[in-house]
Image (cartoon, rainbow, N blue to C red; front, side, top):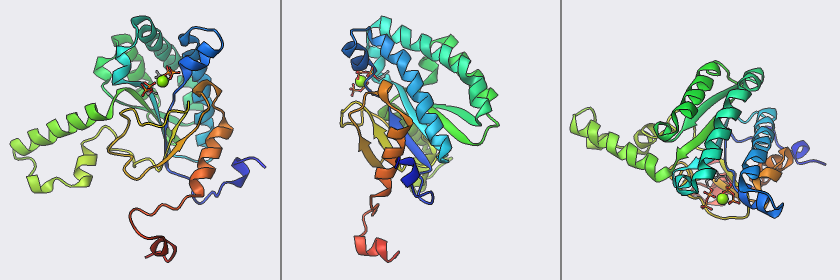
Length: 249
Ligand code: IPE
Ligand code: IPE
Ligand code: MG
């Protein structure tokens, strides 16, 4: 039986985040250039998005390009930006057909102009869709996001819009790029690396982590369902005891 058939439809996470890793190694294993891996990775984005939509996951956040990825060789960065513009522009029709609303988190102002324009246009053209929200993390890093939030909170305290006592968990969340979305219940990382790489540090405080060896271009819908199935076997305790969770205290 497939993992999809075994899922408990009453316990589907609202928000799944994925660190899409391993494109370069996938290509190198085939004697190809790293960029070939990024191109193939687009197909896996479709797999993940379709899988998420089929089981009614409401938010899918994909880590596509980190702040630190700007330090890669220029040819690779340029190729990635090029791929991004082409893919985003080409996919709008499909996104609309499938009810996908596109959103972005990260320092979009640091993206090349053409890339940012294509992105803003696709966001605009998909804004009325409500089946699933696809959030791309682009030029994103969690420390950058937290730094921005702290600066903005400090400014608002200084200009008396906020009182220091107003600073709660909820207020901090509302200053993050992710303010409109719930925290992810599940984070998947491909390629065998067991690290977070500066992704959603504030938001993953109680997220279930799922690390798999599959390289991103090999990621299929069934990998997504397996991750959800695995998530559903876990007990999320949020600091309480197991007995408390079972008796619903
Ligand atoms: C993930 O694959 C895509 C990006 C980070 C842009 P990588 O390019 O990191 O591939 P590996 O990890 O080097 O194999
Ligand atoms: C994380 O992958 C960033 C993205 C998937 C966009 P990296 O390949 O950049 O992470 P590290 O350097 O191995 O930690
Ligand atoms: Mg990598």
